[in-house]
Image (cartoon, rainbow, N blue to C red; front, side, top):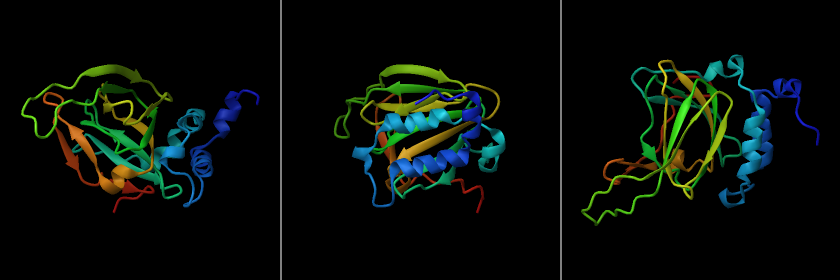
Amino acid sequence: MPGLTQENHSQYTLEALVESLREKLGPCSGINSEDVNEKELQSLMERYISNEAEWRKYFFPSSSHAYTRNLVDKGNGKSNLLILVWSPGKGSPVHDHANAHCIMKVLKGRLTETRYEWPTVHLNNDEDRPLNIIGEKTYEENQVTYMCDKIGLHRISNPDDDYAVSLHLYTPPNAAVYGCHVFNENTGRSTHMKKCGLYSEYGHRE
């Protein structure tokens, strides 16, 4: 297969990416989490070049939130494609991914990912242990990264004084259905968060 030219990239719109992800993930009775080829999905995310005119309808910043989660597509019912808008200098808590795959692409600005080992502290253990950082990297516009629970935990933060925007694919959408766990960086203790809510759906606020 010949390499993609800049023209090929520019013709690969956000709508085309959505359709490609649907096709790759299959129909509602299609593949499950264990069948996902994350490298193929990551390649599709890398192919798309950020175009603000295409994603601006999903841009819903909020000064009262560290970030907002804005639904773009539910795919085959076994995935969520979201645009997250990150407030200046803010970030997520340390969290897991509820046994799902997560692929993140920066659409605007920069985002720093800090990765952690899973804590050794248990609920029946009174000993607090700080989480161990295993890596940190700052991603620029159009860069892509992959994360899952087998790798560890992570947090995402916006290091700049302007809003940052990112595109996230979650498959399956477990956090939206069952919630996820957030972790105290200093103690290693976790708290279950119920369903991770949406700030907007399909470009509209309720």
